[in-house]
Image 1 (cartoon, rainbow, N blue to C red):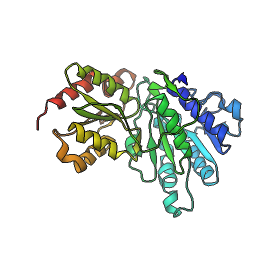
Image 2 (cartoon, rainbow, N blue to C red):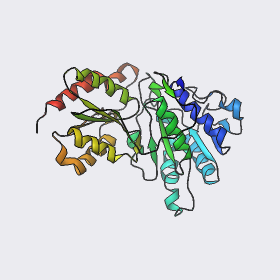
Image 3 (cartoon, rainbow, N blue to C red):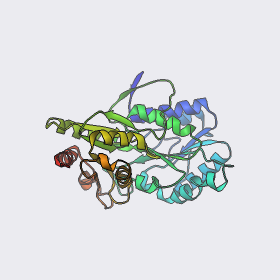
Image 4 (cartoon, helix red, strand yellow):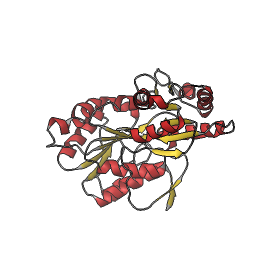
Length: 327
């Protein structure tokens, strides 16, 4: 097995999927010749040609609209949106057409497409470059929303997304594109969509996170271990549809529940997960569930963004408070 970054794992997943299946095409702003603004698709146009890996105008609605048409006519398009905040011009096409086509056509048409989106903050970028948009995507019926936290997961989840018969938004945590490496199998493999992973066993508190924040939670868990607090960490992997079974099994074991995300607090996945736990595991809880999130504000610019995103020390502080609550 090679030891590679999350970015390299995504490139490998795209490369192997295109090599295996001639119907897979890849496109986006600078995704062809330049290999994308983060170089995720570097080398793929040279290997597969301009007909399968190509650049587009700066027109996100056209990118997603074209992907829908391609998918309905036999291709497997992988469309790249350059930054999370640029998705909004294409949001109408994604929600009103891609997500609804199976239902609208009563199953006669499906839309097997993937929209890759560099996601979240942490790179000290400009406005519209650091959005945590899962809140806008997770509640759309017909749309799957996936985000990896490791190179191994990135490859397996992306291959599964490309092979899925319905539209998938693949949120790539840009701040950890090159942050750390992991052994990744050279051969193709899939990680089932909708299946979470327990990345650390624990007995006192269940914490659910996803994407880049999983690593911040792992650091926080080590900080509180010294004070005798055992944290079980669940990486959600798929935001929609999420894995109720794994989350509930963990909460019923620990009795305490926290969701950590950089997305805004109100009306987001954290609220949804807590509502689900209250509905289905209320009598297992020993304390009220907690959500530790970004603030309900526009993501700050570079100088202030670290105040907005959950940091290990602040997560650890909230874990200590939750651990002290008695039934």
